[in-house]
Length: 114
Length: 115
Image: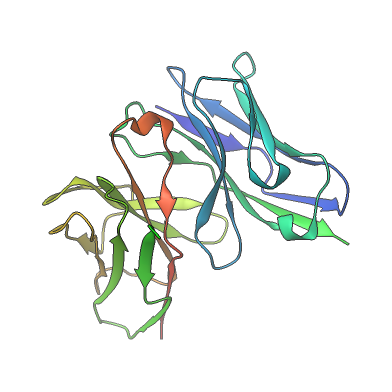
């Protein structure tokens, strides 16, 4: 079965410093992977996705993620944090087929300190 | 603009009452999903539907019911059998053609509170 583990429940960074949110996945095949962002009391918005093309994926708002098959990781990074980046972030892996629901990590709350 | 609309944004329920949360999409997506979100627990799947008049239970279906009479609509009823219904509920949809390459589109959520 597919699963995803977000290694930190909470990350705190200072404004202007780099962001690293860690995600490891488990899958019996080559999966699709996604990162979503959720601001308080809002729905989830797609940040970026990996679908077996380039392993370095660029998303919105300056975020990017690198798919590393040997490490089964898909960490999310941003060179310089902004106050507006404070939110909950979810790492997501595709199911066995398109008919199977996506599998969500438990989320990482990012705090940005001025 | 295409998207998913959830209503109401806030909902209050008395003990013992059933309530229905609305989810409508105009994206022509095949599949629709309901998730429950509690602090620190991520998203948990309640029900999903991939075709009209058919749906499947997710991980926490007890105390909930759904219907899919139209492709655009997937309402969720929280019944009195749901012992702890206070939560944030999210509806999502996805096109099943090429689905492995697509994520979900989410609505803005409904916050349900038992009073």
